[in-house]
Image 1 (cartoon, rainbow over the protein chains, first blue to last red):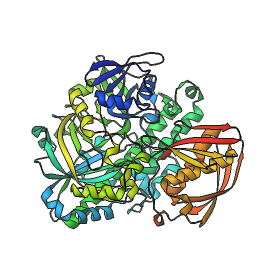
Image 2 (image 1 turned 135 degrees about the vertical axis):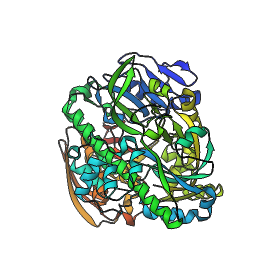
Image 3 (image 1 turned 30 degrees about the horizontal axis):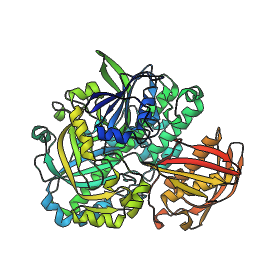
Image 4 (image 1 turned 45 degrees about the vertical axis):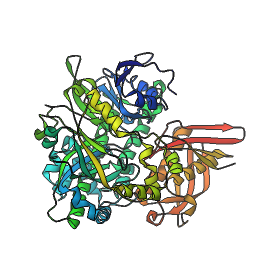
Amino acid sequence: MAENIELKKISDVIWEIPKTGNMNVPTRIFASEKLLEKMKLDRTLEQGRNVACLPGIYKHAIILPDGHEGYGFPIGGVAALDYEKGGISPGGIGYDINCGMRLLRTNLKKEDIYPRIKELLESLFQHVPAGLGSSNIRVTKDVLLGVLNKGAKWAVENGYGNEDDLEFCEENGSMSTADASAVSEKAKSRGLKQLATLGSGNHFLEVQYVDKIFDKEVAKVFGIKEEGQVTLMIHCGSRGLGHQVCSDYLREMERRLPEIVAKIPDKELIYAPSGHELCEKYLKAMSAAANFAWCNRHIIGHQCRLAFSNIFSDVKLETVYDVAHNIAKIEEHKIDGEVKKVFMHRKGGTRAFGPGGKEIPEKYRDVGQPIIIPGSMGTASYVLVGTKEGMEISFGSTAHGAGRTMSRHQALKQYRGEKLKRELEERKIFVRSASWKGIAEEAPGAYKDIEEVVDVSHKANIGKKVVRLKPIGVIKG
Amino acid sequence: MKPYEFLEHTADAKFRAYGKTLEEAFQNAAYAMTDVITDHTKIKPVIEKTISVESENKEALLYDFLEQFLILLDSEGFILNKIEEVKMQNNKITAKIIGDNHPEEYNIETHIKAVTYEEMFIKKEKDQWIVQVIVDI
């Protein structure tokens, strides 16, 4: 599909689509030759080129190593649009606003876990509703307002989790730009039963152990002491509420900004220009949905503590970090020697700030922020650390996961959930899922190789390897 | 003529729905979308509702019409079994929808995040309407 797109090699892991036609800047691709070949099989490169046509875009549009075809933007797409001359594009964030990762470390070792893993998974499954399961928490309209306006702070004020969870969370779990009044009743109605639920698709909870430490010093700063230490990873987002916020504004922008629809190559690339009322309103609504997601992961973390305590006495779960990978933020970046205020879009891109930034918790500020990258079910996940160079070449962003390479449909033809579960159990990886089909769809073979993705990030120096984590038990949404 | 079929898509679900009329194609698109979640033919016809959606053009109407079912599922737990009395006039659709609001009683396989415009089309070929939709999972 992308055979007519010219590519210039910058280094072994960086490529460029030169600026041509309507592009305002070139598009940079972080990929190995192998990953690049996969991107050429669908519309990833074409979509990356379209992003470069957006107004006020700085330096280059970016496709990250796990890039694949999305809506408007590719998944694994990053763009910095000028705060005054650019705008916000809901398609540059995605339908799952603030889909993201939370990692907790424990004081357990893998030997403690194996004998009781099935019990533990059952306990986690009871405490954290997956699939279509409804919330264990009674969410009234007032509660929802609190969640939307305050994010994870609402949770701490109401007895879930603790201050440390907030400290070690991007934005401290609460975006000040949020305003619940910008969220439609439709969107709110989708969120009422879904607080503290995992959802489905590729969302999961995973009990893991530290398999390899690449950088002892940095790992120590992140509270990861030794190989064999048990960690817990949470992957989910803003559920139906966030999806509806994205959809509502995409449609409203389409209705009210026909002159923009007329000039963009793809309707899903619609944006609200800076200064337009819809730009401001969408920022408020998107931030509220992001708060819902942070509160969601925060309460799920709290529920996991309860689930672990049911099985293990004196167990401690502490948040390493929580980071979004579908979000737009107002950020300042040094561009051509000048500090510019931008609407930073990361869709399937993890913020990866290097050392020194005030946005990073004080404890991590000397080394850079933790970046949490999940593998596919049954494969390794990684913790990386942000770099100074990443701030310059990728606006402090890196990959967000393995990225699909096989359709769900194809995966269902090729894999059987029951068989996959047995095979994983033989490798001492235990799975508990709301559906067999869900397991087959998320088969590890349906994803790109996480090692390849992480290696590109490491080589390009936009996120360096710190720790590799391997799964023991998975709750699949 | 098959009512709908699924096509290959890397990350999500892509389908085409057919109909002798545009109403029928829209109706079949709703069945196809529900089948991504669970087999719609197995849903008990317990609850009846009327929905009405108006949009600025046909594509927007398809988007908004399908989205109604995602909103109903998340907010009320409603899953579709069948659609009756579909009426479309200009860019407005009214339909009687029948289904169940106890999703926990069925084998829910996947949840859909959103309807998208990606590769969406609505066209008439000979005597047949074809609509194509990708939903985000």
